[in-house]
Amino acid sequence: MLRHDALGDAELQLETVVRRNHPSPISSCCIHSLYLSAILGAFVLQPSPRSANNMRLLKINGDGNFSLTRFIGREIPPYAILSHTWETDDQELTFQDMIRGAGRSKAGYRKIQFCGEQAKKDDLQYFWVDSCCIDKSSSAELSEAINSMFRWYKLAAKCYVYLSDVSISDSDQCDRYFQRSWELAFRQSRWFTRGWTLQELLAAPSVDFFSREGKRLGDKKSLELDIYEVSGIAITALQGTPLSQFSVTERMLWAANRETTIEEDRAYCLLGIFDVHLPQIYGEGVESAFRRLRKEIAVFSGK
Image 1 (cartoon, helix red, strand yellow):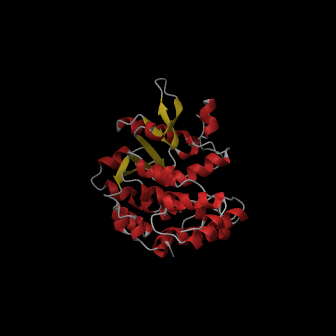
Image 2 (cartoon, rainbow, N blue to C red):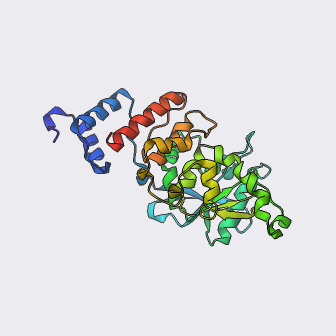
Image 3 (tube, rainbow, N blue to C red):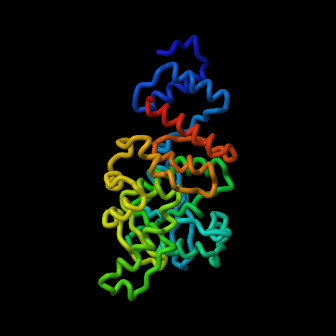
């Protein structure tokens, strides 16, 4: 028990928050260390990803255009979510494009349209896409989104993986051996090399894979052997075994050969994999980001 005469109000508040949110006992010494780190700016106390409950969702209007709606907590309706690799040369639709009703000529428009149409087929009115549902001009909103991402994918009714580098024709689908026509491209897809897609694959319970034409290739279950052989992710993890059952080393290995456009994101994209939250400090460098991530993992795993 921490003595009241030894701590200020701020540290008492920190103790209350940590003990309420941490699943296992944590020592007074550790709490005091966290408090000192917060004072020095090395640690910023943020809400757990489990408590983040604000998100914008897209829907297709009657005129074929998209609209954004912000939902809070229990108001959030069932939704589909997109997993994809980003286009180059500013060809992704952004939040600002959505607000202005612009961006139809961008290459990324196709995947937004696909996601909305597929969601409608699955009787889902709303869908979420990272490129245009987050206002990235707001550092606070971006940080909240990054810390909430794993949870958003986990709670999605459907996750659509759009593979822009896997293409099949209608004749391929009629071919009895049609799977072989795209299997090599599937295994070589850039999607398997990106950092953010790791947590998207593992978090979402229902994952369907589609070609660039919007043709369904299979789901996480039917393609699990291919996914395992390409990614090295344990099949039991793909089948939904809690990630806490896998060692930190094994989970780190799943991400070892994955890349991100921004170097610090190599660490930030793993927050959900380890069930921790972390403030983003772009410009700190990847080594510093991983150092803070490992420290946070150690604190919250009790090691």
